[in-house]
Image (cartoon, rainbow, N blue to C red):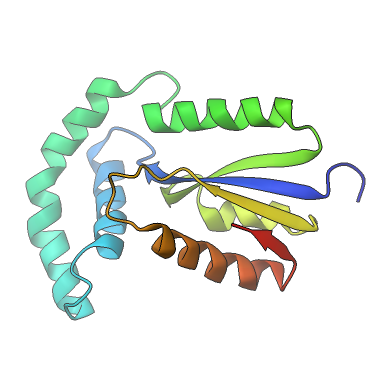
Length: 156
């Protein structure tokens, strides 16, 4: 492979694809399914999320996204892409890409083009205020990346 042998994956929390009810509903279901009610049986968890939590939060959440949405998308997506572009131009020896834990671009979609690289560095951009610990973020990254990269060097 010519060019960089190392890839840098910037991993951020995520954002809906659009400030619409459909996109925000899908996003909320994905996030809440992963972050809440883990001690409940999966069926009960999904019933509560889909019939109580998402309907209760949907309109307010859509309005909040609409109020901050730009022609470039959500602010989180826009600034994450700007950071990715800046790192790409400052580190030409490293192929830099962006993925979101929730929403798009997804981790799975982002990983496939990185298979030819010998080394992968994952930089988590999760805000500290979230209840996701660094350990949880690392576990997610390692499990996805170990399978995808089959034992190649991964720095987290």
